[in-house]
Image 1 (cartoon, one colour):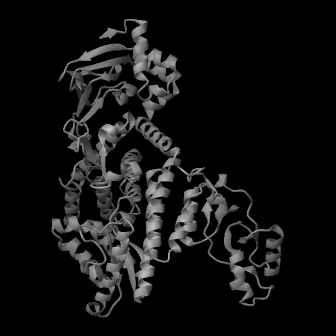
Image 2: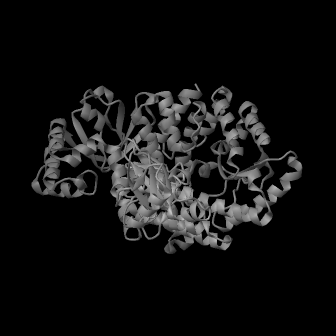
Image 3: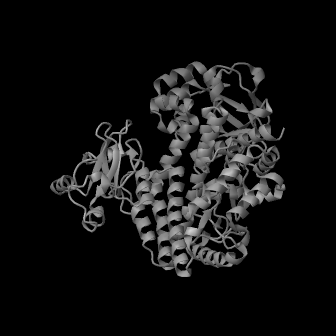
Length: 635
């Protein structure tokens, strides 16, 4: 170990540190303190840097050049991992003044700065960015990655405010409300005088919203119905009324308005008392290309050509939201919702043209659409459940209808499923009884290869038509799966068929393709989380289909530590965001030739330092998740 020999060298080292987190956020004098308090150390290839035998650590190390791999002493603590230039380690052991639990070895000529623990604690007391990084390393990386992404897209976005704005910050006026017994004459007079488009009906004691009467209701419910103006407003109000909490976001309001086809939304405090009302004009002033505008265009589309245009708008809307810094969960939920609206419209158009009665059938979504987690490059996974006393007679008409819908979706940019999991496949166009028999056979007697193909069906969701036909299909799966150990074992084996993109010592395991070092973010990333969440949800009788919701529900049911669940969710959503970045980049005009091939491949060398580190950590979390599955189901 050598001290820093000169002030000029210290200055050069300080400048080098500025390329890494947390130094880029630290004050210059604090960077100087780090450098001047540290000593330099060199480790030759394969030389041991730290191990449990060394006892309590005495330094925090920063890798200037080279890399260090770590191997946990216990297999259950996870596989190998790797630290590269710019990484600080071992943070946990340094903060706890304890021995490390892994053996650290230099994998190449490695140069480190070693900061004594006393100096580390002193610097943490004076430098908030340094202290925050030590205590919340992964969260800091995620926040910085998201900030960098937002900055990269900000110049291209049309949005002026974030869809994550709390509703309390959007309220421009208090809600006007009347009691349920108020005569129509009084309520309408008040609407006229106040020049408002709606009036709420509020509980006289709690202030909660009981219903709403809007200007659009007056013609049909009062004028044409010839209601006396002495009629209590409760007799003509719309009820129940969709209400959101003040802590919910503009995104929540946008989805509620779009899903329910409403223009006014009461906002309530924690007690349920209405504190204001939000109109679509208030909400969609946030952005010139809005969720409401896109969804309205889809719902009004007269033909497939118009829906193809609307599908392009969905991608443009997603591009804009990235510039707002919207997270992966919100973004995939919004994309999935708009894809739902488009599919519903298409199903309705084709059904009307073919004389198909959607009261006797339901269009089903499977896979990522069933989970509400669609990215931009998504193929079709769908099916039909129909009502019939003679399936052989009625199935051909449903199949012809489905084929036209599948082909139209393909024309709109949703490719046909290579595995033929589509409603136009007779195996995916069944009566409720046939579906239930198929699910029961998979659970009770299915071979591993059957379940490998079938797992996508366990994410089913009703999308268009008679949703009541689909509900009984979900309940038996949720109920039976957890009580069938053989089924859970096979599902666990399927969940382990693909490993995270990490090599034996914990570095990112990329593959050369077209002169680039790439990994498949879906196959060796998000799919691992999705499969694990599905397995644990089925095992614990959790009915949720979204990956995040499944993880959170499983944690409550099984007592998994909160920090572990946060790591699962954070890793999954970060990988989802990377996938969206790759897919949006392929849509840009300058990438016109890159639209072929796998839309989930990312060039690891093109990632910035922060994203490379978060990617590695997300893949390590995926590996630990698979190790948990092995311990729980395959011992």
